[in-house]
Length: 206
Image (tube, rainbow, N blue to C red; front, side, top):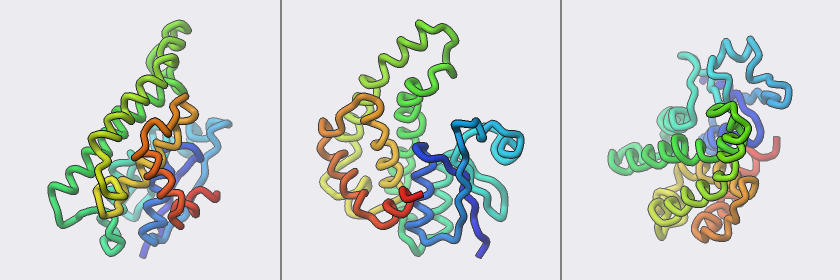
């Protein structure tokens, strides 16, 4: 089987794909980019991903980007790992709905703290956006707590899926965004449960 190559940076959403690849026992290598030296903006990397962001996954058919797409790819490419409800159209769509919310709403709320310059040049406007990050992230995680986490141990109930690694990754940003995870008991229980998984420990080691 062709070795996949994941372009990754610590502390980013690329962690979700790294967890998924380990869970799937997928042959892969990890290339870590140094964001402190803007390696993601280097000509070599922009030739791989013109967006200048991670993750990017090099496959034998081409490069894939965007976390929801990469997670769906891993789950479908390695079905024996049972990382998505591939035989249940509704449950699969529900998973993708959750991924869409994390990528288009929650991640953007977080990015207003770290990357506010994407949306404004005015220093006062940037500062105003940064002040809203904690409240916006808390609101997002209130939705996750009430609407997406039920009685089961995982996002999809009793079945573990790639959605769990994605939630774990973004929940890990809460403290840095000024939000106490303890205010969301289901999210916190899920986060602690995820920390016990071998794939998560392996993904965080380097």
